[in-house]
Length: 412
Image (cartoon, rainbow, N blue to C red):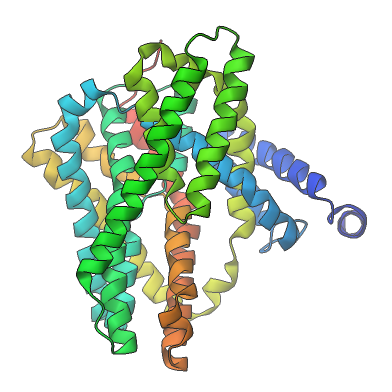
């Protein structure tokens, strides 16, 4: 066995296509094994990545993972369009106010609990606030994949998609405020909150604008098309450009592509054919997306006892904030018992947005030019987030599946 691994490492591991194939096949095998024990296939994909990635056999080289992250960006664009496609004006009118309040309560409760808990642990104020804001982020990928796999529909899914969509925009604003406060503490220079708020809203506005334009272009380009292959080619081309423009301008590709989906579904119900034309592409993309996520996870974070303690508190208080934020608000709105009891469990997965925010902190001038002590605290903060991502990407999907199964209505 060792000899086989050495041959793979020496002759094949350098090749990008081999890496992609290995991620897909190992993801498929572990996905099937997990489904046999009633776990979502996503858990298997992530485990496969961990085993063959940087924390395991190291058969996937770092440079290949960096290139393959393009596939992750494509997958997230598909996921965002699917979420946006659930935002019909009818549903917004029916659930809009409740979804907004549910989102805000769980977001601020999570921020408050995590920040307070880490302050009690005597972490610096700026670290506690930043981690509190990052804790508010929810990963939409696992949720969408499980919903699609189960072909679930109904009120529960409508609330779930609505919260996941708004949570991304809300987290951008909350994080911008927390970062402005933290940067002023670190540098000793007072940062204008008004500037941070304006910056956050401009990021959301321009992301919405890009998505709006992309949605209209797709709609009018395929309106008279009947050939699904033509629809698929045009849609993919515009989605790729929408995603790349948002990323290049340092905007949110998630918000941009959610807007694309929302525009399409509200311009014409016939546009459901556009979303369905993408379905044959999603399964392999989902498999490689989560396998890449697993391959990038590092077990090194578990070597530091202080990180384990802080990470454990972060994970626990984040879960409390997400769950009880939804439960208490749902109780106040007298939502059905199954929705208020299980909806919060579907918000636990955490990945790309959280990692993106923590990398933004690491690369900001305020941190780069700070003291060695501050940089050590930020390094610890990064490890806490990575530990949370590791845990929530493994535990979150099974809990999401349980919640969705308890509220399952199947599509026709």
